Image (tube, rainbow over all chains, first blue to last red):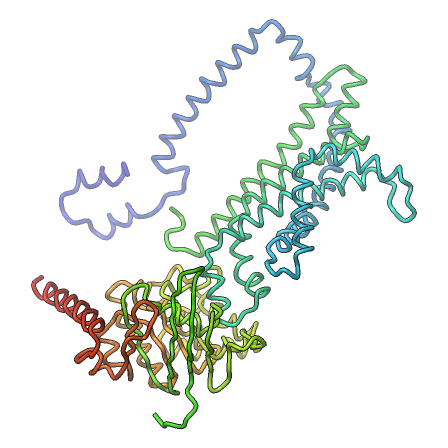
Length: 297
Length: 260
């Protein structure tokens, strides 16, 4: 905006092709004037705000104690290996659980979408499942399954609390994921369904080839949020004694009376979740640009 | 029209309703093979509903529809098979935005008629070439103009090799300068020997392309006959009022254009 007004003010004759090319060539983002301007403002305002909050914190009465308890470099280094080891279990859990959640959630959403009275029992099951596991706090489900089922000692069923904790995560996350899918499915305009049916596609084919691909694309951001929520939910499995990152941090602080280990665990979680969010945003934007005119704007 | 030939489409006593609102009343209509029938009438007169009913997107409330002599409103009808033979093109194109032009066209041949990808692609490319859209095969619909999208939508309905094509106000959502290309394509469909039923507001086009014009009002067929009769010498008062209104509007538009 600033650039074009500058040009029109100074040039009163028609632009030559070379001049036009200079104006129209998009510079990389870090060289753009609007970026430099706004980032300068952002930097200054961040320094002011962080400086102010920092001054308040540092001058508070308990600062030195806090620093020793939560920001101790020595304890940071000492606790890191154990927590890292625990964190790998968190990663393993959510990498294994997420694909299952995506599939179970989709199946639930599709069952819920069945309109024929023949399928009423399936539809009823899906609704009951979703209502139940969305209504229950995840930590309760983990406790009940993780402690309860191994205690039953049923032949052939796993007695590992870790396994049942993971199952609990699948159940709660799937319920939320199903609702995300459903929102996407219902957001597709009925004319798309009509067009597909008019071509002779059946109910299932219409769903699979026409509705779902559009719906999933539309709900990728909420699905991604669900994935991040799941990553954090794996920390709840610590309540049934599994040595994952949070539990490892707790164990460390219990023996040393220092809480820096929690900071380690927190940083590890954030180091995964934030880049992942940015990556999805980027991928979505790219596919959008490919599909539409002016999608970049 | 050979009198004893089986009509391509035959409606007998067809009623249609949305809730308690009756949209079609006692419709009797025979459309011969290779005939082009234009449905005209004010908005809400039931033109679109009639087309959707013939495509079986809506179940009839009463009455029957026959396609080439086969009763397609019978309870055991395989609707998906019928829809392969009866193409429906919508006012708003309704292309699938996540699929390319080629994929839009080959979806039904591949998934319903179970053609191989190679066969379906080849057939689709033939159609695209014939109608001058071959260079758009790999584009996504959102990147095409309205006229191009509607032509793709017509080709998509052609790809299932139907005998009847229903066109529901296919030029109403278009910019004026792209209406011509779509009308030209419809005229070609006629030359291909397809049976066409089109709901339209384009009176000039209806006059040149249609063998018969059917005027509908409040869900009923009021008058039908060759274009020269229905448009120039309507016998029913309601038809006359509608035609006068439309034609005077057209004249006004033309005069306004000339004055510019």
